Image (cartoon, rainbow, N blue to C red; front, top):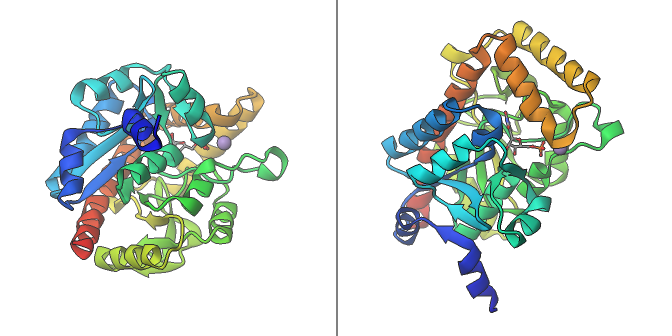
Length: 311
Ligand code: PSU
Ligand code: MN
């Protein structure tokens, strides 16, 4: 089969998303691992729907990405979203998993890496999520470095996030991003956000107050032929920020429990998030939702600014 036909066959772009892209209107990609592994049912669906609604409120079109039946779906309808939300057994699919999942015609929840791949193939340049993957604590022993970082090095999508996952080594994550030439831009902040808290203790490369300036940098980067994406770091709104000491302690405990119970690799994040939600009596879940909504809104504004530069 010709490669463009094969791509057509395996990449299904929802009609609404396709139309928006053809007309040069703003589109924002959303990931599906946050639905299957980041939150539990029914909150996961409610949160996914609210993220989409936030993007629409800002005048952009949401495109949640997932693999269903061996096809990369860009833009899910209500039934597909519910299907993802109700099936916690759906596999988390990063770059290395994608070929076999497609070949076996299975379902898969897309991580930041694979959502970027889907967005890139569809021509979507802005993606909103919670936190990116990165370098895990103790990575010098385990080599556990998320494929998200290498994807940011090669796929042209700007990822709006509240920093990296809270359980990571943030300093090392920023070093790897630097090595791979990925710009880390703080949106209205000098501090690299720490997911549940506004400041991780590390800085960003540049602080930008207006999404137009970020859009300009994206355009210049790609017009120069520079590969890869950008990290747009957007801190959790102050009203929802958690107490750094309390959440820090809960995270340390959860990481230790994961180690003690021998939880490894891609199971670590779901294990720790579920534990944190319990340990904080749901506060971490509430914060998680609010930071995702805020990222969705900022991403929609950024997509609009980028669309107006490109048309
Ligand atoms: N951040 C969170 N929760 C998550 C993730 C990130 O707070 O569940 C997911 C994202 O989909 C991210 C993935 O791309 O974890 C990274 O997983 P890994 O470290 O296994 O590459
Ligand atoms: Mn990993």
